[in-house]
Length: 53
Ligand SMILES: [Zn+2]
Image 1: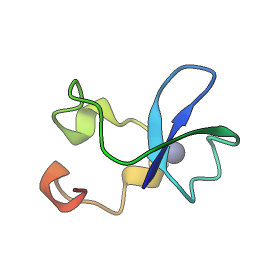
Image 2: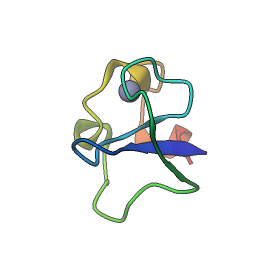
Image 3: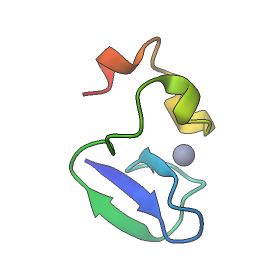
Image 4: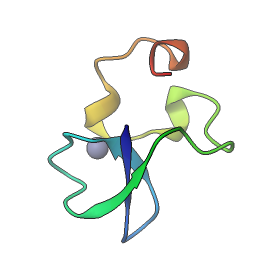
C-alpha cells in the first residue's frame, strides 16, 4: 500500500513522514517505471523498482 500526495501527486510509502495526508493507492502508477520516478527519501531503502511491488 502506498500513499499519493494531495499536493503534487507524488507517490510515497505509506509510512513516509514527508507525504502527510494523501490518497491511499494499492499499486504504483503506470508512469512510475524506475526509482528515479520516486524521488522521495522514503524509497531509499529499495535498490530497484522490482523490490517495491
Ligand atoms: Zn516519501
